[in-house]
Picture 1 (spheres, rainbow over the protein chains, first blue to last red):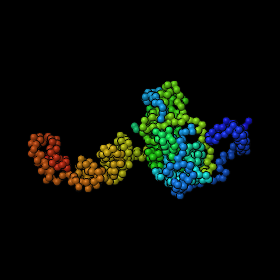
Picture 2: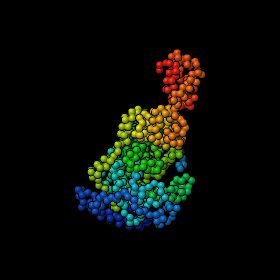
Picture 3: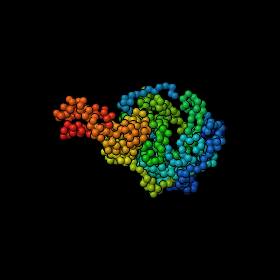
Picture 4: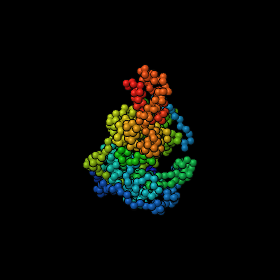
Length: 98
Length: 504
């Protein structure tokens, strides 16, 4: 029994807007299951007194002063845009896909 | 638009049967010079997509860097809301697909907000104080601005396409979330309005936000549910999004209470969903139901390291806190000697600061109130503008008042002078000179007018002589007429008595 079900993978694929065939779902269920199990094994080593870590390097409070820096021009910002109107990005009707 | 009209139950009837339960999420846009994670300017109203950097656009390979001032503003807000400040907190990615966020996630905070477990005492209009518990205040970034094009309504429904401006993308936000609020009863709509007003007032007094609701600097999502009186379990709630004026917050909560009651009375269930507020019809319509799409798959933001606060840093910030608005109001009322009703009227008229400045400029509290709540408010109402927008300065009031005190003009003339000042004719002194409005108190000119009046009204003179001093009032009309309203009433009385040889 994999740690992750086929339904879990289908759900994640849906959330991530990734279309997957039945064959791909089967394959990914197995592969993700292996990864989840491997990561779960960490908890066998870490005892309760080891705090959870989100960053491997113990840096904190990396701040920037509140000073304005250079910006892109609207033309530069829109360089990769598939479509635009004046200086704004143009995107397809949003509710269409729902 | 909704295809049907919602059934409603009369508010008072609904409240006989149900208790409303509230919750608010208020987003406050900070007024830092730059954005939360990039050095792009945080400016409202510029040409679309000119205040952007690669970070704001979520271009590949960019790295965010936290704005220290934004963190300090978030801590200030937390302290002002009586919150605990986290010793350590971090940022998280909230994942969703929507064109207002180009990187497909919003950088926010998840299970470790920078401020938590606070409270705020909300003063209702009659002075009753209602404590609202604050669950958390966390840092995040604003999204870009969408404009829906085509379609009939300019709304997202039926739009042909949308235009996106990322100038707002990455503007620092603090989201303030209340705990569940019970026990407001029929005052729920009023409490909703007062709560948002209090938050707005606090962030304004802290000077961490421009706090203009019409610009979206302060935005409220209002959660409402009903439970049968005496029930222990909360009902299903709806979340009305982006209610962006104080009046709208009040109306939206009221509307949802009336709508929920009708649904529940019919035996149906409330659908847990987002509701959209429509100011034009003062109704809400169904948005999107809660669904899989609300699975935001939060995870720690790998590109941002934790924020650690020291007690020294927090105390340094605490020392910067201004006097809390509610305490300040209490102090001013005591200093000015206004009654509760007088002071409440002043606050509701939004002229507290104006009165404070006028007093500081050199009038008594009573004089300042007389002008701001009287003639200035009346002129503003006549021109259909806010009192403060009439352009009357504290200096004008001080000058007018000193003209009255030196008996150059009387109260009635002073009101006319103010009108001319507002019309742009100059300072009060200039207006008085240009229009020759100074009170006639040189006795010879007055004397002529009084003699004429006495001659014309022998019966009145007889009454006064007989001791009916109040009959002098009848002489006042002709004297005022002869002097174009510029006579000083007190002086007229003195002169009449003098002429008749009567001791005043």
